[in-house]
Amino acid sequence: QVHLVESGGGLVKAGGSLRLSCVASGRTFNTVGMANHNMAWFRQAPGKEREFVAVITWSGDSIYADSVKGRFTISRVNDRNTMYLRMNSLNPEDTAVYYCGARSYGSTWATSLDYDYWGQGTQVTVSS
Image 1 (spheres, rainbow, N blue to C red):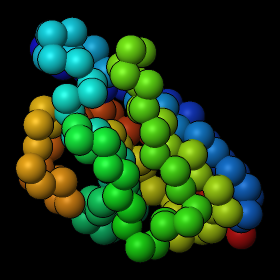
Image 2: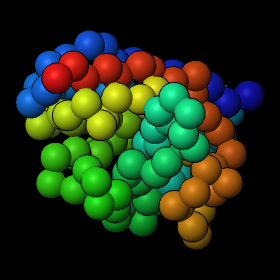
Image 3: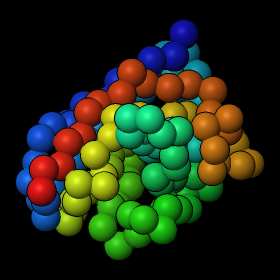
Image 4: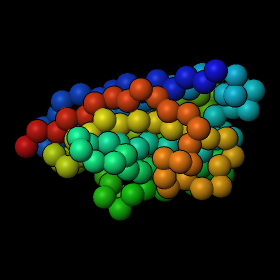
């Protein structure tokens, strides 16, 4: 059993910042470790499909969607099984439910099909 739990969402004004957290637990993380997983953030706005935001791969690369590049920073602390998303210069278009996803040793990372495990999501609302 794998659990991913997101937190840190909320209501913020345009131009503000938030930091999301995703804590992973369960057998695969206890044995393989977060370092050996692709860990990603996706988001889903009302009426839209879930879209890729950022990933930190098992090989250590950080990759971002063009829409958040330069504003968001993904990171993780492996020995805490915790991943973060620092979001700066938020705008109303960033409003969505943010989900973390995980897959061990994934070779692809850009779509929701590339992940085996998901959290329940955390709401981010940016007011203008």
